[in-house]
View 1 (spheres, protein in one colour):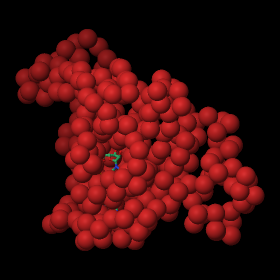
View 2 (cartoon, protein in one colour):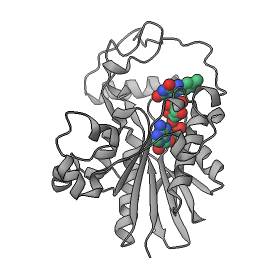
View 3 (tube, protein in one colour):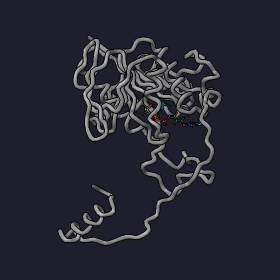
Length: 290
Ligand SMILES: Cc1cc2nc3c(=O)[nH]c(=O)nc-3n(C[C@H](O)[C@H](O)[C@H](O)COP(=O)(O)OP(=O)(O)OC[C@H]3O[C@@H](n4cnc5c(N)ncnc54)[C@H](O)[C@@H]3O)c2cc1C
């Protein structure tokens, strides 16, 4: 029994390595100063998808990302690691989307894909950090959802048994297909890029990229349909413009504040048992731990 698997993956600025120029003066992210990366939780989600694919011969993994043209980079990244197909959802009409409008656009793209058994997302993105998109997409598609998944333990054509991370523990749940899973950072890390797949898929390109003067692999792309990344606009996914982008975003940002953490005081300790004991005593006394 094969599964049709969709992974939602977001290209994010690498906020974990933010330097001094990471923020603009108006408090917005200076995206040009931060490298764009595959959202870390989404790599965990991709790995769960690839494990399901291995377990169910003949399965297909489709990765969808919504973003500007350069987000096609993470589709190639997913192909290097074992995904079968990449779809870029890109349109000016999607710009300025909050989580509701993002979820609507992604759910429209999933409807266009049509057949699916399992949709996997990361639990949260490291830039927006809301963890809202997965649950909202499930709601819009009328699907059951299991959030914060650490491991898919069993899978069949009708159900999945998964371990999910909860406060102070782990819960095992069984849910029927089709369904949506959000994958926690505690899940298995994604496998590395495969060298053979890199040689083949570094030529994969969206129609826009293929049309660019610098694209040197047109002949290969004509022979190998897997090199064609799909690019869908609002028109392709048949969405309501009023529910997309800024127009479809009820969130209003009132103010943005720069918060700079500064150490007020510091203490130098040695690795001796005595120093460690005194530090633990201090942390317990002021309820930092325990
Ligand atoms: C008023 C407003 C305007 C905004 N305008 C912009 C803008 O112009 N440009 C911009 O980049 N951001 C914009 N944002 C931020 C944007 O709304 C969020 O980054 C986006 O909705 C995802 O939310 P999140 O990052 O909290 O994702 P989370 O909910 O934390 O993500 C959970 C998971 O959902 C999936 N996912 C989330 N986003 C995507 C995606 N784009 N493609 C595929 N999968 C995804 C991933 O699997 C991810 O791990 C705006 C936000 C607001 C409030």
